[in-house]
Image (cartoon, rainbow, N blue to C red; front, side, top):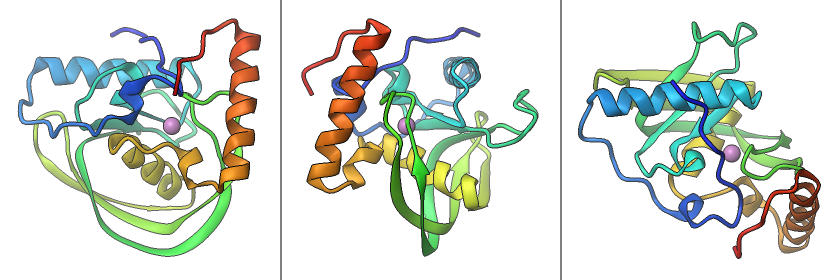
Length: 175
Ligand code: NI
């Protein structure tokens, strides 16, 4: 396993639509292992393949207290089965450091997905799990959480992101 370099807002890979996984091979296992390790290293609750520069349709989520890999969800080719209700809550993203904004999401969500072996599963999420699933599935379609903001708040968020990146000494891409 390896901790991967994170990709940040402005990196074109974050705007690509991911490609469905057809080969459930060792390479997919490595990607999922790397996503989990990179998520834990950065204290995140979810991480999607584009955030480490990979365009496969895969993401990992862990909203547990343990955060030791025993309760991590590895979602390959996830599809939303149903959503209901709406709820506002604060959200951030490892690819957009320095930005926390209140975003409206569905309150409950049901998602079908495959595991690393191609076996089908279904997960029902409420509260934080529902929010993280929606956030990560957005990543797989090239959508970032600041896209859900109005123009003014979005512009402010981009400015906050740029100053956070400058503080970290990291370069900002053109997007
Ligand atoms: Ni994110």
